[in-house]
Image (cartoon, rainbow, N blue to C red; front, side, top):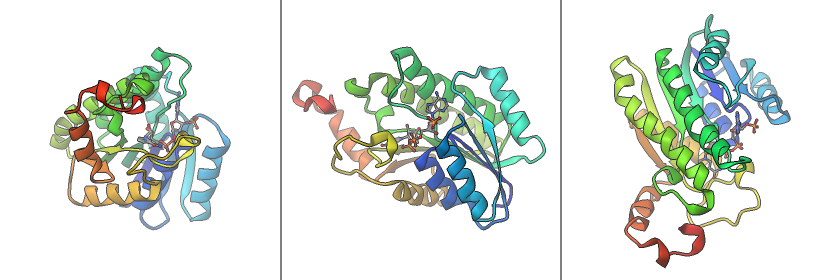
Length: 234
Ligand SMILES: NC(=O)c1ccc[n+]([C@@H]2O[C@H](COP(=O)([O-])OP(=O)(O)OC[C@H]3O[C@@H](n4cnc5c(N)ncnc54)[C@H](OP(=O)(O)O)[C@@H]3O)[C@@H](O)[C@H]2O)c1
């Protein structure tokens, strides 16, 4: 890849691992979009140290469609984006509505705006919870379902205009998002997510589960009545 790369959720651990895996050698222009934070600046510094040209721009899940277009126009007008990674997600929203908006509606609007810009690749960090919603993380799951379904529906339409959209469905990944939670079977890490994403892009896939058996596990779990499962899996 030679064009610009955009990471929305510029402070994300998984997003950064995927970005680094896909970027290719410097020099290259990278845009980190997110809320100002120490993690975002650290990611920017890490990329600069590796020789990339980095700019940052503000993205907040509260942006409406017009504001998202404005953000993308400002960030990408002079340097069209070739790769866009969407890594926004939160399990600590203050309300049900906020959780559904941050993980779902905001991401759906962002994906639609990105597709219009025709990058070559869009990578959405979805979740296994989009297919197997769980009561304990209801608003996160419902939001992810919305974002995931939007991406799946957009993928075909996007392909007609030369845009390849990849939906990534990890299970449990050890990052700050899951810090303090007990590790379930099949837990993985950001580098393995990045490896699976790179391989899926090479094979022109639309959906990839991480780790690979997660897709089978989710399908098997959906055959079991919820009342028979441990509370955390319902
Ligand atoms: N970790 C896992 O087990 C796991 C599993 C499956 C899927 N995922 C998905 O993978 C993606 C990356 O997660 P991660 O593990 O790398 O966690 P992370 O480091 O916490 O990244 C989450 C990103 O979402 C951003 N974000 C959260 N609320 C926002 C808001 N209201 N407005 C704008 N940005 C907001 C965060 O920005 P701030 O720094 O400003 O909060 C951060 O950049 C997420 O979509 C997550 O749902 C994670």
